[in-house]
Amino acid sequence: MARFAAGDAVAVRRAHPPGHLRTPYYIRGKAGVVERLLGEFANPEELAFGRDGLPLRPLYRVRFAQREVWPDYAGAGADTVDVEIYEHWLEPARKAG
Picture 1 (cartoon, rainbow, N blue to C red):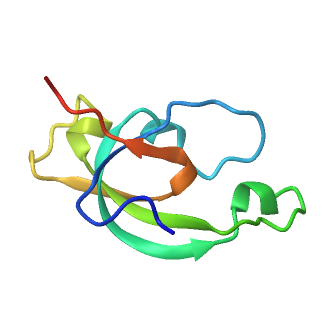
Picture 2 (spheres, rainbow, N blue to C red; picture 1 turned 60 degrees about the vertical axis):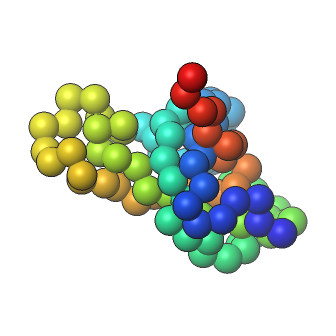
């Protein structure tokens, strides 16, 4: 069962484990919003080592403000970037205040 739904604010874990990783380095530690759940798939971090990739992991498309990802971004404030991220890399975003 998926932990997050479309519209949920999430943050990408800031982790640096060894091995094959499916989460881009530049997005770790950043906050975004779940755009949609894409389904459940075998974990590619496990498949890379010849394992079965089970249990299946929910995969999300998460939308980030470009300025959240790259602080020096000079484009329009409404510009976004979408990244597909497996659930084990996500946590609820902390609320300001």
